[in-house]
Length: 195
Image (tube, rainbow, N blue to C red; front, side):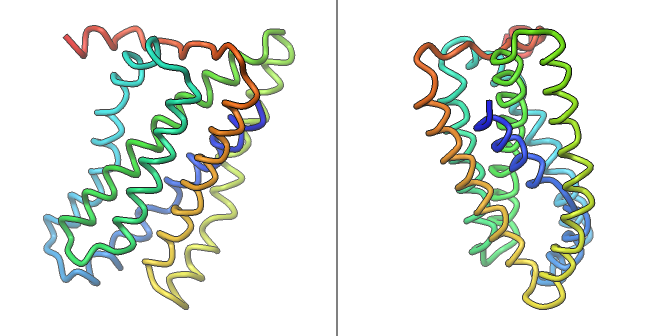
C-alpha cells in the first residue's frame, strides 16, 4: 500500500499549478492565444481519453504493470516537455504526462482499496490519502514560483521527471510485494466507451 500511496502523491504533484505555467510557456515559444487555450485544455482532454482504457486494460493486466506504464508515460512526457524546441512537441509531452497522471491516480486508488479490506481501516486510509492533494496544493506553489523566478519553467519539468521516476520505482516495489496482483476495478462505462 505504501508504494501505491507514493505513486498517488506523484500523480497529484503532476497537476498542481499547471495554470501558473501556461503564460511563461506561451511567451517562451512565442505562441498564439489559440496555443495558450490548447495548453490549458490538453491535460483534461488527454486524461479523459485515458479513463476508458484504464477500465478495459485493468481486467487484463495487473495494476502494478499499469503503474509501471503510467510512470513511463509521465517520465516520457516530462522529458519531451523539458527538451521540446517547438510548441507542438511540448503539447504532445503534456498529453503523455496527463495520461500517465490519470492512470496513476486511478490505479493507485484501486490498489489501496484492494489492500485494505477492513471498513474502518479503509476509511482511515482514504482520509489520509485525501489529505495529499491539499497538502501538495500548499507546498507546490512556492516551489513552482521559486523555480519560475530563478531558473525558468523548464525546471518545473525536472520536478515532473522526478515524479515519473518515483512512480516507476514505486511500481517495481509494488510488483515485488504482491504475488497475486489484484485486478483494477473496472469503470462501469468503459465497455460502452470502447464500443
